[in-house]
Figure 1 (cartoon, rainbow over the protein chains, first blue to last red):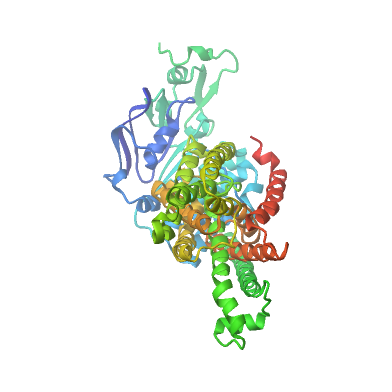
Figure 2 (cartoon, rainbow over the protein chains, first blue to last red):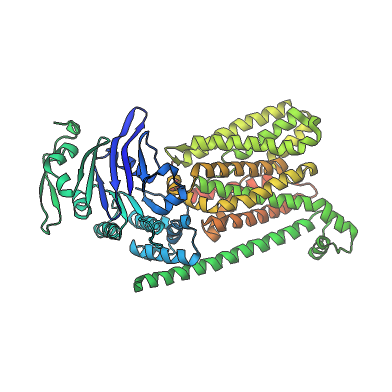
Length: 271
Length: 355
C-alpha cells in the first residue's frame, strides 16, 4: 500500500498541500480531481518520492519512501509526468527501454517487456522512429509505455504502483479511453493506479475512489457517487452543474450548465 | 501472449539488431580512422617517415635509428597528448550536452575552458618557475579548479525551475568567458616576455609546446576521465528525459550530476593544462557522433572519444603542414572550422533554439 498521511508541502509561506491524507491500495484505481493550483501534482510528487513534505509522511508498505533505496522504489512505482520534452534525437524504443534500467535484466528480457509495453500503449508503430518527430499525443503514448515497462509485472512478487499526471491531456478521445482502460486493467490485475484527471465524467466512469483537492486541502474523498454531487462541484469548481445517472448505470454523469457559471473571481469563497 | 505482441517483438528485435550492426560498423570505422591518424601524425613533419617505418618504429624493429628516435621520442608524446585531448574534450562535451539536455553545450562555449585557462595562467604568472617540479601537477590542478568553478557557476545560473534553458546557458557562458578574458588580459599585462609567450600559447591552443613534465599528470587525468564518463552512460540517457524523470527511474540525480560536473572539469582542465584552449571539439564531435550512432550514451561516449581523438590528430597534422616551416596553433584551426559549423547548427535549428 502506498500511503500519504497528513502531508504538508510549503514553498515559502504558501502551503501547496495542507495535511492531506491519501491511500492507494493494490487493486485500486484512484483519480485525483481539483481546479488548477489545487495541489494535485504536488500530491503526486509526494507519493512518487520526488517531493519531501515538511510535515506528514509517505510510506510504501509501511516503510517511509525516504528510507527506500531509489532503485528499489523505481522497481515498485512508475511516474508519467505531464509533459516530458525530449530535446535530443532518441528512438521510441530507447525511451521505453529506459524504464527497464532499474531492473538491470538481460537484453532479451528487456526486449520482450519493451515490445509488450509498446503494444499496450498502442505505440508499437513508433518503433525505430525518433521521438522528436512524433506528435504530442504520440509522445505521451511512448512515455506511458516507458512507465508501464518500468513496473511491468514480470516476477509477480509485489504490487506495483503507477502514478499518472494528466495522462489524457494531449490524447484524442479513443486514446484517452484506451489509456484509462489500461490503467483499469492494471488495477484489476492487483496493482495500484493513481491518476490526475480534469474530466469528471471519465473519472467517474473508471475510478474506484475519487480524491477531490481544493486550495491544497482535501475537499472530498470516496466513491464517485459520493464525491460528485452538485453542492461539492459548485463549491470547489465554482460551476453550476446537474448530476444525473449515466445511461449505462456506471456512476454519475456531470452535466455543467452551458451558461451562467459563477464568475471565476468568486471561486474558492466558501458559502 | 498475443500474436500482436509477438509481431512487435520481432519488429523490435529486427530494428535493434540492425542498429547494433550499424553502430559496431561506425565504431570500427572511427577506430580505424584513429589508427590512421596516429600513424600519419607520427610520420608527418620536417622529417617525413613513411607509414611502414612508423609501424616498425612502434614495434621496436626500425631499420633507421634516426627515424625511430623522431617517431618515438619527439612525436609520440605529442600524438598521445593530441589523441587524449581530443577524446577528453569530446566526451566532456557529450556529457555536458546530455546533462543539460542541450546540443549546444560545449566546454568552450559555456566558459569551462577559459575558466581552466585562467586557473593555469594564474599559476604561471603568480608562481612562475618558483615552484619547480610541483608545476607539473599544479598546472592541471589549477586548471581543474578554474574549470570546476566555471562549470559550477554555469550549471547554477542556467538552471531555473528544474530546467536548463539554452539562453541562460549560453549567456552565462558569455559572462564567464568575458570574466576569464579580463583575467587573462590582466595576466598578459603584468607578465614578463617569457610568461607572455606561455600565455599566448594557452589562449590560442597548441600541441607544439607540450611540457614533458606536465605530460604524465595531464595524460593520466584525461585517460581517467575518458574511461570514467562512459560509465555514467545510462544516467545521461535518463537525463535526456529530464532530471525529474531520471530521479523517478531510480538514479540519485544530485550525486550523479556532481560526478559528471567534476569529471567534465577534470577532463577539460587537464586538456587545457597541456594544450591550452582548443575550442569547438566538444561541440562538433558529439554532434557528428550522434548523427552516426544516435543518442544512446553507451555508444555515443566511445564513439565521441574515438572520433575526437582522430579529428584532433588530423587537425594537428593540418596545423603542422599548412604554413610550413612555421606551425599554426591548432586552436585557431579548430575555431576556424568549428565556428562556421556552429553557425550552421544554429541555422538548422533556428526554430527550436528561438529564445
